[in-house]
Image 1: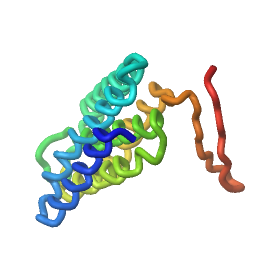
Image 2: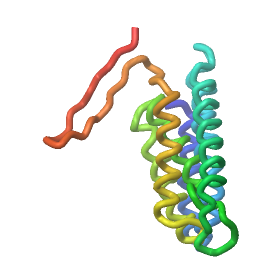
Image 3: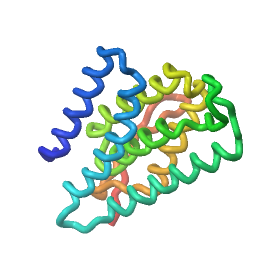
Image 4: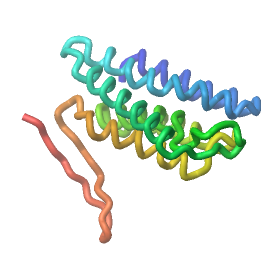
Length: 179
């Protein structure tokens, strides 16, 4: 893993630790909403600087789809927020953006690099419920929008993909190689 990505992930974990203990749950969620997608985009610039910017293009497509889908669903559903502030509760935009970033890292660079971003994205979902901006269904839908957009537009960077598949009888691993 590059030093830049390692440093960005350290900042992410430090931000979560410090602000969570300071009882600033909502502020931490707001910070992570920007930080996790930034780490995802930065990873394409670090890992792929010599091989083109295919990952950057995939990131932009994933982010644009996530943002457009989230905005459209908010307008269509017109769901009132738990705090009564407005009618744009479904789905959670913070959650969709952070899970999009975590899922992008997962699909492009592997699960090892995505564990901390997934933890951060889960924290963001919690922070939105804690702040009474969303219900559980709002953050679940936001996570689904973000994950699905990244899964659709993103390909593995190393051309080798290892995917766990959960089945009724257990778990299997699928290996695939692009030629």
